[in-house]
Image (cartoon, rainbow, N blue to C red; front, top):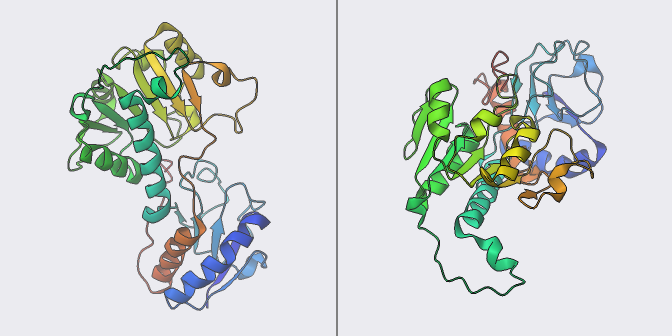
Amino acid sequence: MPDILFAASSESWEEYEAPLRRAFDAVGLDARIAPEMAPEEVEYVIYAPNSALQDFTPYTRLKAVLNLWAGVEDVVGNTTLKAPLARMVDPDGLTQGMVEWVTGHVLRHHLGMDAHIVNPERRWDATPPPLATERPVTILGLGTLGQACGAALGALGFPVTGWSRSAKQVDGIRCLHGADGLAEALSGAQIVVLLLPDTPQTENLMDAERLALPAPGAVLINPGRGPLIDDDALIAALDAGQIGHATLDVFRTEPLPEDHAFWAHPKVTVTPHIASTTRPETAALVIAENIHRAETGAPLLHLVDRAAGY
């Protein structure tokens, strides 16, 4: 019977307790799981990086930490954590939510919906939008989320280019990598979707130089991480018309401060970090399966590469 600590908020425990118990029953694993436990007893930690647990040193029996979030930037650098760290990859929750959000906002901008939804002058402009096949989309980040969003957009007919730091091959996506590949991926794109992790290498990736590469008037959509964008450079690109609109779901500071320029900018849509979220019912199944694997000698899934930061 593995001893499992749930290290997150009390509100989260209320949401997760029943789904986790059902999930462990489903995989046939008899586990003791609780929000409080003596450190020397704990074998696994189900973890939210904003929890009170920040020093893993007393957890001498720890076999693995299973992150509740897709992002691990707030825990990957914790030098007291020596055990394996697994990130949350949930196809039926996180991934599906991201696909729906990204597809919805890409279609919104592709079809020009805003002009019809808010039209106080009652203009009758019967100019049809281009077909998806004429609207090149670039996705920066070809992890689980990027690949899934690329597949969904490709199925609708969009020509999708994907970029990643290392070489990848994904069916239906033109894949580029490295510094030269990044410039090529951005050049001429009409819609750019950011789905990269937050690492020292990706911070301010979308600076003034790279914001100048997409087609004039391109749309920037960021459900990835706030630090991917140089905020001042983006505002300048919006004011100059180089970027036609930015739809942003993540920010350097959250909630986004009330006096931030993004709130009032007419070419910015702010959404409150809702593009995708961990859902207890499906996330519990992922966690239970991973712990079951570890207990039966199988390798853990979704392990974080500490050197890469994700």
